[in-house]
Amino acid sequence: MANLLPAERFRGADLSRVADRARRVLGDDVMILHTRTVRDGGVPMVEVLAAPSHALDTVRTRLEPRPLPRTLRTADGRPYCIALVGPTGAGKTTTAAKLAVRRGMFGGARCGVLTIDTYRVGGMEQLATYAELADVPFEVIYEAREVDAAMQRLAADCEVVIIDTPGRSPASAELTERWRTLLDTIAPDEVHLVIPASLRADLAVDIGRAYAPTRTHCGASHLLLSKLDEVPRETGITDLALSLEMPARWITDGQDVPADIRPGVPRLLRAWGLSADAESDWSPA
Ligand SMILES: Nc1nc2c(ncn2[C@@H]2O[C@H](COP(=O)(O)OP(=O)(O)OP(=O)(O)O)[C@@H](O)[C@H]2O)c(=O)[nH]1
Ligand SMILES: [Mg+2]
Image 1 (cartoon, rainbow, N blue to C red):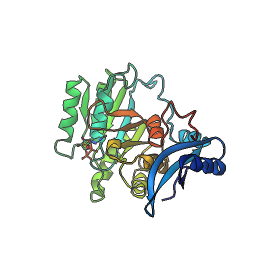
Image 2: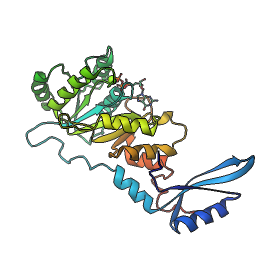
Image 3: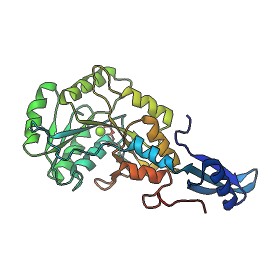
Image 4: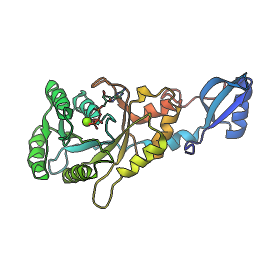
């Protein structure tokens, strides 16, 4: 898959010469994203990953989500609904728990949880336990006709509802059709596609297509990369995120509930070599 970021690698005997070359090719405002030592035919070399500084704006524009509405409850009193979808084992349930129980995740707004994953043994119990421990309202829905009543119960207490869904396996098309129809009835305001950061970009793009909105079903509106802690070299993560062409409100980077969840764009910029404070003044040494 082509590199989606306007970044280039340069190699040479020493850092100042490599940086000079990067500056000549990419312009004076070049940023050094990563530096490492590599062996080229047994000879140690400095390798630099560099990008023109406007690349930062490109990444921001493509990944930055619209801010959440100031008033999360809609005019008709309905809570703001955020659903998590994605392949089996991607981290949907864990992420739902993090979002729902982490204090201050949505300012002072109170969160509820709703699951339509009634298929996997244990999946529902796991989320119910987190909800109970954190005193967060919890609802399970099996059929479309239950949606209104459950939503009304949640609306009495909550301004945000996090919705967990079953994993989609290609082998169970009928089951997938059923829960997607159920999700359409809920009509979430945001649908986050949860994908492990270690996934190959071409496979992730296929998954993105499988969860895209269709004429009959609501589809993913946001990307949520999970398990960043499991990726040894992070430079590819931002590329992976860009290849999915969706804004990234959050990422997750660990199993701890609710600690391991973070705002997406700052973390993805850091994965790319730009820490939030360094991004404005990085220049070649
Ligand atoms: N290292 C790491 N593990 C994670 C992260 N998020 C979730 N996990 C782990 O991944 C495994 C699967 O997580 P679940 O939340 O059950 O995944 P799911 O998408 O709900 O799975 P299904 O409901 O079976 O489709 C669990 O062992 C989680 O602890 C993360 O950010 N980092
Ligand atoms: Mg689950």
